[in-house]
Each structure stands twice: as C-alpha cells, then as structure tokens.
Length: 69
Image (cartoon, rainbow, N blue to C red; front, side, top):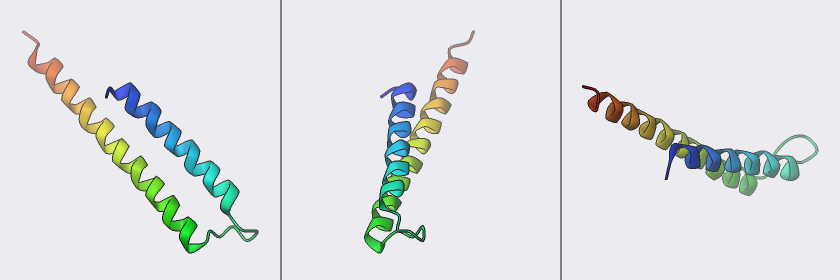
C-alpha cells in the first residue's frame, strides 16, 4: 500500500469516526460504554495508520538517500 493509499484510508476512518460520534452521542454529549469501545477501536485504527504512514515515509526517505551517488 502506498503512502497516498494509507493517507486516504486514514481520512476515511476519521470521517467515519466523526460521523459515528455525531450520530451516537446522547443529548449530554456522552457515548454509551459500547459506543465508546467502538470509537476507541476507530481511534486505534487511525493511530495505527498514522504509524504506518510515518514508517513508510521514513523508509522512502532512506531509500532515496541510499540511492544518491
């Protein structure tokens, strides 16, 4: 998966997480325990994708550096 693909996937997960909160928050702005667990999983996926993006960008930078004369 390319960095661009990962960034697009992360954006989709973020949009889904925002939408989830908007549709599941109670009047006082609180999520149920089950909904909180679901949101936490979405947030974890965003963090994992961010780490993957950072790792791939570092690898690409190293590759470019190593290919310099």
